[in-house]
Each structure stands twice: as structure tokens, then as C-alpha cells.
Image 1 (tube, one colour):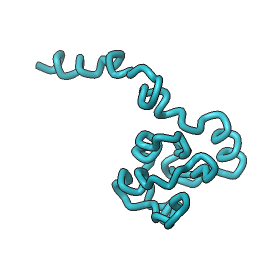
Image 2 (image 1 turned 180 degrees about the vertical axis):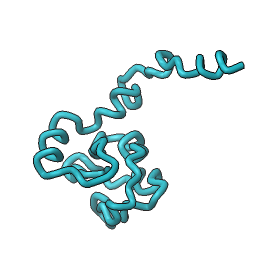
Image 3 (image 1 turned 135 degrees about the vertical axis):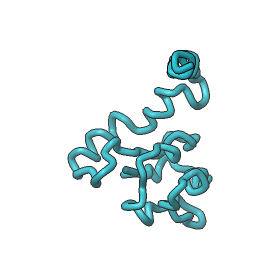
Image 4 (image 1 turned 30 degrees about the horizontal axis):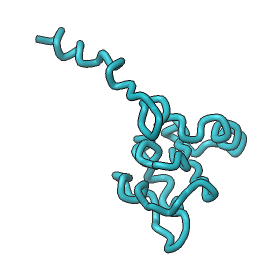
Length: 109
């Protein structure tokens, strides 16, 4: 579930607002968007994936909000890590070539 928008890192581009399929965010003129409907978050990571500044943290917990301890500890270590893991962003190598899930389709036929 979306837990944090780092207002110091956020540029207010609102890409996360547009990327969210469940309309979790609200744009704030001149500032970072706010998490307006956190319970609507589906933990799809689209906002974190598309954020060009790695200013978002989506906890992998989908069925409840993270506790303050879980949120604060994980966010410090994992802010923007999903983008990094898949190789999205400046100076990162795509990991798409490492994905062998296409084998499932080949083997099914």
C-alpha cells in the first residue's frame, strides 16, 4: 500500500497522480500530491515505478496499512527501490532481459 511521498524529493510533476489506476492521489497546486484515498491503493507499484525522482514508497503489504515502525524503517532503506530493481530510471540497466516468464507461454503450447 502507498505509504510515503517524500516532499523533499518530489518535484510536483503529478506523474503518480496520472499513473494510479485507482485514483489514490490528489494533486496539490505548487506542491507534492497527497495520499487522499490510501485504502483504495491496490499495491500495484505503478506510482513508485513511474516517479522520476524515486520520491514514493509503496509497502508490499496489500491488506493493511504499515505500522509506523514498518513504514519508517522500510522507507529509509527501500525508497524508490522498485524502480531500481526493474531497471527504470536514469543510469539504470533494464532487468527485462532477465525475465524468463515468457518460457511459461512457450511450454504451454
